[in-house]
Image (cartoon, rainbow, N blue to C red):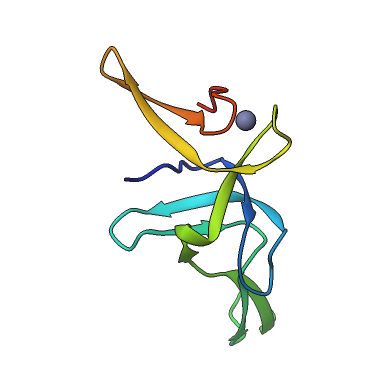
Length: 102
Ligand SMILES: [Zn+2]
């Protein structure tokens, strides 16, 4: 189930950027991936255009959302998230302390 939303601040929990925090720019539900603003950057060589000189630009690429975790303010660390449905509305809750993360 998709636990993430655009604008969420998450921590990367595996790979070479482990420990990095970034904001979710996009959630790709079908691919189970997220695009972060400053993690998993790839270098793209761009050709010059009218409004752009060209050159190497770093752009974020999608990464599996299993590699990121939401941070809980109360626990002060990345935590597992539980989905709770109350009155038909989905809420996210920290699995450790029960703090609402929505
Ligand atoms: Zn917590």
